[in-house]
Image (cartoon, rainbow, N blue to C red; front, side, top):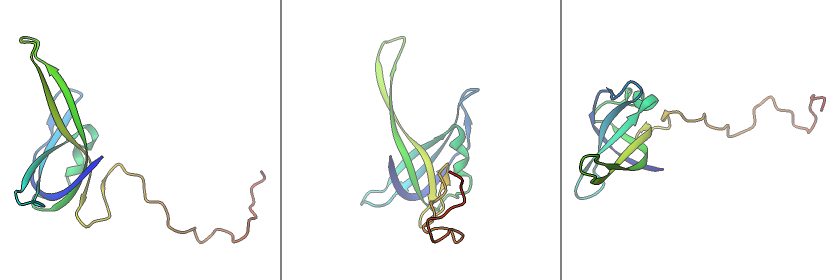
Length: 124
């Protein structure tokens, strides 16, 4: 798992690649070094809607996986390698509310209705 923060600079529409596969691309500009980098990410399948609440120009944090694959051209038998950055969670920079399929946060204290002693009403 990797993450990066930057400015959302390009927000593309969802593409229906095949009957069963859809993707959506977006670009985040990382300005943390002397030379800003424009980084292309993709959202696939059920994750394509994660980008909807964000607007170009906003600072966001992207959690992503690095994927690599091999492809051999059937005509020339030449092998090529491709990489993709598959985003799986997006959040506004400085926000504690991520957009993604995360579990809800765990409570930090016991609920108020818990008894103080070790007794309970369960029969086992």
